[in-house]
Image 1 (cartoon, rainbow, N blue to C red):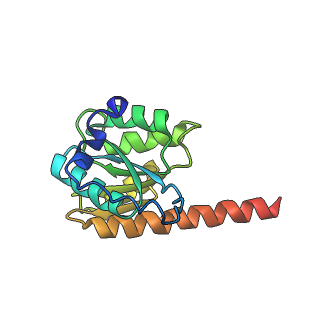
Image 2 (cartoon, rainbow, N blue to C red; image 1 turned 60 degrees about the horizontal axis):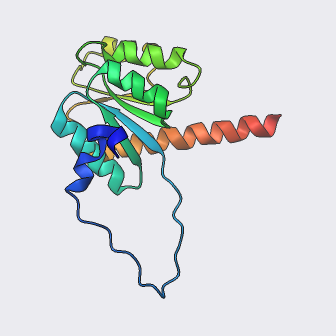
Amino acid sequence: MAEFGREFAWRRRMPPLAWPASDAPRISRPRGPLVLIIEDTTDLRDLFAAELATDGFLVIDAMDGESGIDKARRFEPDAVVLDLMLPGINGFNVARILRSNERTQEVVIVAVTALTSNRLRMMAIEAGCDSCLSKPVLGSAVIRELMRLLVSKRSGADMSRLKR
């Protein structure tokens, strides 16, 4: 846990899960997709993390572009929720860097931004984001978009495997 730093600090505030009775059959639950949240606003980052974890996603987070890129390379998440207006390396450049790295080029990237200009939203897509949602955005909308993109990616991967 020390390796992840504050990524899982919000989990400590949640009540512990109840374990099944010893005579109850144990069902192994599949691991959910790993999502990296790169967001500089602590409250929003924690809100997204809590909602994603509730829906079965595994979550790590970063508060700026540089640490987000580092964590994406180290942990190779299935998806990234990316704020475009970050201190240091902005979200546009984070997306470009992730797309240019062999280990992270296939990651699903959902941009979340307060920018409302269609031109800037198109720049986000051109930088490598798969989708762009406008703030304020509900965590449920982020989850729906992540699920849509992850299912689409998996279907595409299955189809390419069938073509071989």
